[in-house]
Image (tube, rainbow, N blue to C red; front, side):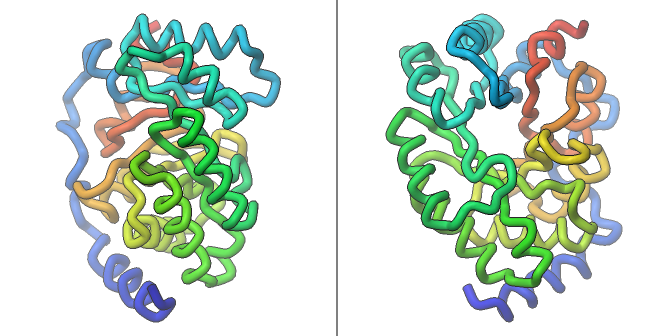
Length: 248
């Protein structure tokens, strides 16, 4: 897709989004049962010092509580896949994490390896510097290459909302949608801030019902998770998943 085409789409969406009701948002008074919440949670461990024992515990908890996936660094995908064999729990991995500044060809290869090792979902980090530089064609191509490399696995694009203006958040969501991604995601959890209900609502306004919205970063309790879902999140990324579903 050419940059001038992307610009036109972004300008159109910016004009439309003001005052638009988030189409994927849920009833403001709705609450989720533990099982309903679990089915929306990517049970996550991405810290650099995570051990094999911690990965195994993550997978066991995912089986026990019915989380939709576990999200792990690429080196642990094969281990998680082996641990979850025969279950309904998917394995998700991160690509270009946490900065998004790897070259596109490296993101492609990292994605192919993760899928080969058993990943069924891919959370890739958008190249924020390229977006802010106005190189929208690069950003589109970067995402599209990962989407193509991941197929049939689904791709979530982490836009790192805390580093973006509202117009840049809109642009990132539009480009992710045009590139064929399946979700947009708020945050890596490794930058200066995580998910906010305002950002989730804005992202849902932009992508409508045709994509998922994942809220991640700083979600540690049930109240916060439910607020994100009411704002339009269809997926939650959290390491405190057990506490969330228990309502602790």
